[in-house]
Length: 201
Image 1 (spheres, one colour):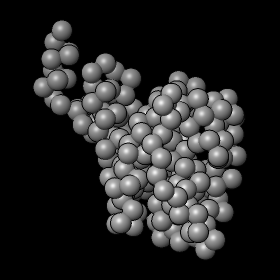
Image 2 (cartoon, helix red, strand yellow; image 1 turned 120 degrees about the vertical axis):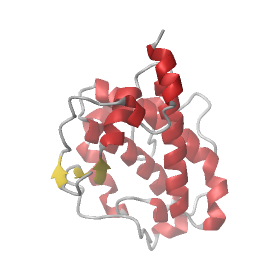
Image 3 (cartoon, one colour; image 1 turned 90 degrees about the horizontal axis):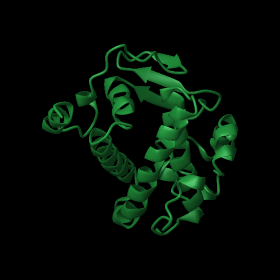
């Protein structure tokens, strides 16, 4: 898969496991991802999918942290969560929201099979052990789209590794090196006043 990696991603990585700041960043990332992918959905379908996407992305925040704890680099940990989302899109026939073509679904699963199998994740069950106890809200499927997939936002040809576009526009395989100094205030959703309060206690 081709993803981006910049200052905000490194700051998010640092902050997601921190008290107070982590919750703020997770909430903001859920909002960002939900709005981003809903923009790719057909307009008449957006609101009926919102609750499911919010719950889905909230669960993938936990996946991300566990993948980091399991030793995956930032780019791979994040790609794992994007794969989970795309599996759910695929299962629902939401092809217009997919980031890679339907014929690359299994390839993306296979690359992280060890992690997925360890945590009970399958293509049919994208969250595995990260599924909330209450499950995810239901949303209507469009299975007919799988017969003749239309995925205008999918980028094919990147199923063999994680390809990362840096802030400089350079595309590197596997992602970049984490900067020595990362300011958590650069993470999405961080309230500088809350950060200063937490640091001052």
